Length: 367
Image 1 (cartoon, one colour):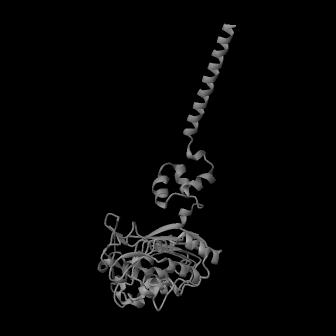
Image 2: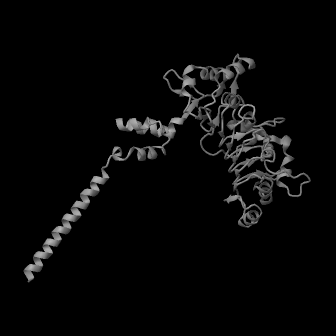
Image 3: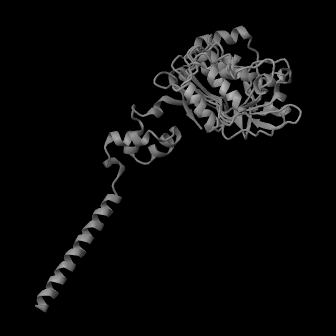
């Protein structure tokens, strides 16, 4: 009996060892599965999360099959492209600019190769070359072209296929930059003018991390005013996170002609009256509850807004130069006067959210 038990124990031990060995072998086989063994639909879904640079400059160079996958017309990256406002050096690399030449840009966009490159399905344009080590190409060289000649060139090269324009720059802006040096991150007006003129089909804009006009006494427009209903009547979404600029922008008059503006994202913006001293008294209209004239934030462009985010919004007080959060009553006034609002992200307290939810149950509030 003892021998029988011993043999049975040894047999079970061998079976256990064989089972574990087979499990390890199967595990090793699963670990060395190649990407090509994954169904094509799943591969495309995975690749859709890569940036265009990672997809074409890195993944596509791994193997022939990877290169073939990167050329799939289903991938959303095929809709993206970049427009570099720099010039080519003798070695073929693109240099950064201290100033932007309108003549060079107009000549470049009028080339047949540029027109071919920006035909459908490419519809997302990213601007590069206007940022250099945290600053912006601050000036524009008009060369020898007259305004009439520029308008004629622009009318010939307009592209209605581009629906999304990304002019954002990397990193957050430095809020402590002296206001008299704000131009270090403000785009020269010629670049927004050019892009708004050649891209009449725009639906989305992104100006994140740029300073915003007005930037001088007597100036009352920002870069957004150039993307008006005459040039870009279909704009529905604007994003300008981390904007640092004057207080006139709070009126929303730069966007009042956009009848289809449904989404506005202005997170972590800072309104500083020193950037447009001429309109400094406007601060009281927005942030002083006892002011004789009381204004609603973005009152000139809120007739169609449905999704708005102004979380982290702050302003600089006059005299003491203290940065304060947008008052709760100012945020509540915006909600009550924007009748089309459906989604709102801000720094409202839970108590005020509950109060507004009772008044406007159709709105989704987020913090």
